[in-house]
Length: 253
Ligand SMILES: [Zn+2]
Ligand SMILES: [Zn+2]
Image (cartoon, rainbow, N blue to C red; front, side, top):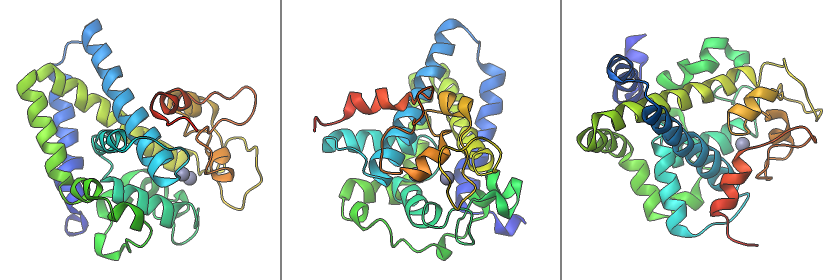
């Protein structure tokens, strides 16, 4: 097992969880620190994954200005789920076209713990074809974020610590919440247990509170049915909070 653990495990996943233990030990849950955690969670989970990696880069569901694209791509790196090129490649090339099939890298049909996190720490990068991100590979900033990914995350951790340890603690707590939230989506929103607005061949389901709390991605069956829509809400009672974030950075169409 140890030999199967990849560089992401040793350089990001393990240190982040160790930093979490340190953060939980040291942080005081004052109003300011709770605000900081929510602020960083909005940046990493909302803007980084929800807006940048998922709706903008993976599905091109809206347009924005290039400097904003680069900045929110950097925020996505801070969600500690890999570089934009890695995330988008897996999502576009393996998850959507092969949902819950053999080539889907994180489907719960391969096992609950596999879908939850084991896939991410054991995946052999040499087995992945980076054939689905040619648009991103042409952009210098995206190549930098990809090849310097570990450096970018570590430099941010170190800078945060030197600005104020409380900032590092709040950032790490937000990062771990963001990471496990994404793992929950892989597991619970492809479990077949939830409600469906669309009859699809995969096992994607909507989970109302995951939709509300996890920046819309819990309306997962809606998203698989309409991947190019930046709103993952569909039914009248569904609300996708990421739509508000998209509107804050979207070019008028
Ligand atoms: Zn899915
Ligand atoms: Zn998607």
